[in-house]
Amino acid sequence: MIEIAWAEDVKKVAVNTGALNAIASASAIVQLTLLTLVVMSVVSWAIIFTKKKYFQSVSSRNEAFLDFFWKATSFDEIFSKISKYEDSPIAQAFQAGFKELQRLAESDLAQKGGNKAPKLQGIDNINRALRKSVDLEIANFESKLNFLATTGSISPFIGLFGTVWGIMNSFHKIGTTGVASLAVVAPGISEALVATAIGLATAIPAVVAYNHFLTILKKEELELSNFSSDFLNIVKRNFFKED
Image 1 (cartoon, rainbow, N blue to C red):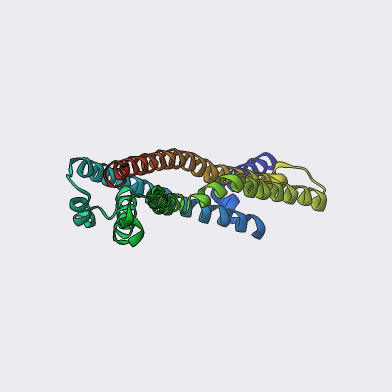
Image 2: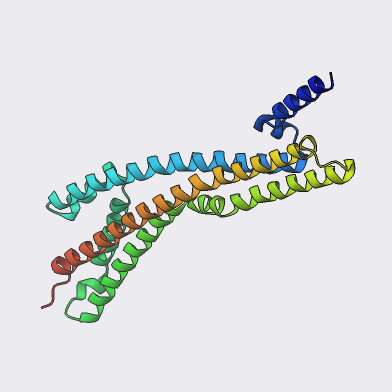
């Protein structure tokens, strides 16, 4: 009878150390920690899917606009159809540069010619307009990525906090009961390990996605910079020729 009772106790302990039961029986602090990690994970995955779709759209729209840009015969033709490419960051950079070029062409300063200073000032204005547009587009690229970086950085430590708290509970039970059996320490150790696992499961996808999106961002930033340089070269050749 004693052996049968002992076997039943062992079976009961084995069932009670399951992950779901460990979460359900965890202390309020550990449960709050796990809830925080779950919320961060859900938000991270939402950002990952949203950003993936956004960057795919940006890439295709930029490609379409550049194909149209190099086939067009004039800036006026491009500007008249710019609404078709409003989702393209490169198209937005072109629009900003072209509008500044139009303002310069309509100003008395640009019409005087002859003097080299107004020409240099005009080019600088266009360059600033392009730079501002590029900076705005890069800010859009970077939007919400800081959350992924933060999640990847702090999630393991939040999980570690839950781990430490679970182990503290185990030692507290040992001190209270005076028994260091598996039945006493297993619940606390189980919830501690669950906290560690969830912390890592939250951090790893966030870090991988952040690094992936950062690589794409640098590529898009390079394309914007290259287009800005090409646009300025075209403007210099056609609108700011030296006599």
